Image 1 (cartoon, rainbow, N blue to C red):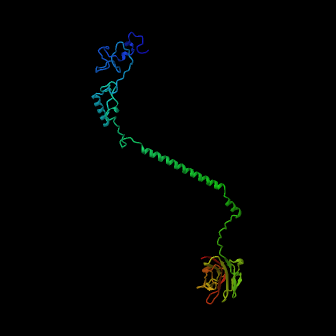
Image 2 (image 1 turned 135 degrees about the vertical axis):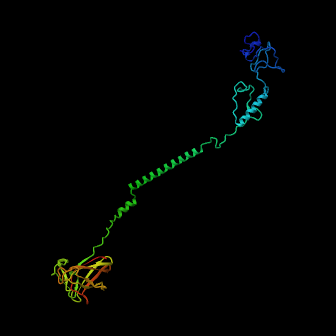
Image 3 (image 1 turned 90 degrees about the vertical axis):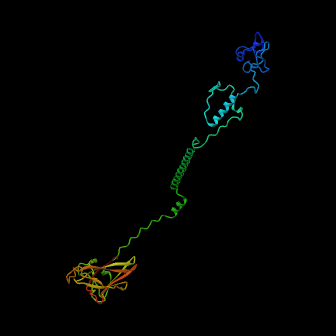
Amino acid sequence: MTAGNNGSDTPENDDPFAYLYRSEGGQGGQSGQSGSAPRTGGYGYPGPHQPGVPRTSYNHVRAVGERTYGQQNQQQYQQGQQQYQQGQQIPNQSAYGGQGQQNPHYAAPETLPGGAPRRAAPSRGTGGRGPNSKGLLIGALAVVAVVVVGIGVAMITNNDDDKKDDKAQPTASSTAASSVEPSKTPEPSKKPSPLPTEDASGMRLEGGATPASDIPGAKAAGGNYVAGLNAPGASATWSVDVDKGGSYKLYVQYGVPGEDQGLSLSVNGKPANEPLRMKNYANAKKGDWEHGWTYTWTLVNLNPGTNTVKVSCEAGNKCDVNLDQMWLKNG
């Protein structure tokens, strides 16, 4: 269908959408497009019908700048802008103007003087909800801790594996050394040898001293002892070896006829300060040689190695003694 040829009775009745832009009350009393008379042809239409002239357009847009904005609209805009800057809530406007209604002549804020108001950036002070930096920091630390622990576990595991490999596979140097040099068995620690004991009959006898065995009770082997020491110059000398030098106890087993006796003592040729006292410790009766066996001891200083210990009958001694044994103990 085209304008002016739609089968209507007259060209002016050709518009099928005329009811959309006709004003109420008919089409009379309206003037043409020129002049200052108000337009009543409907929104976007230039004017009234003209008999005999077909319509060539159904949407005549107003010219740029023809629309005006009333003083009321300008005041409402300024008031809304102030409320926005002060943070107040602007009343909701509906689509049909008035309070709670949108003004029919509303224009975008960008087209008004001064342009659209600028929104202030939200503050990140203590009152606002900024980014949760504390939570992010805790999360980052947790990730770092997990990584460090994982690295430590991996290092420990690798070290254990390396130690196992080292034990399982001996090095070439250790294998060669073991094949060339046999292992040495540690020598057992030497225990100190027991101190010697000597029968008087086995010593060097001089000056009339002689072995005897007629009086029972001697501890020497075979019951042998040394008699004849009651003559001046008679002696018995013992050669004794010790590992360490120092002070030792010299024990002497002897027999007396129920009376105290004594002999002179010298060590390594050096006479002792006092004679070797041979008392009747057995409390035997006078003349009872059989029950007069007993012993005594004194301290002597010996050198490492071989030493000589001599008992003898010297002037001033009572030498009526039978000599049985000698032995050493640590002093």
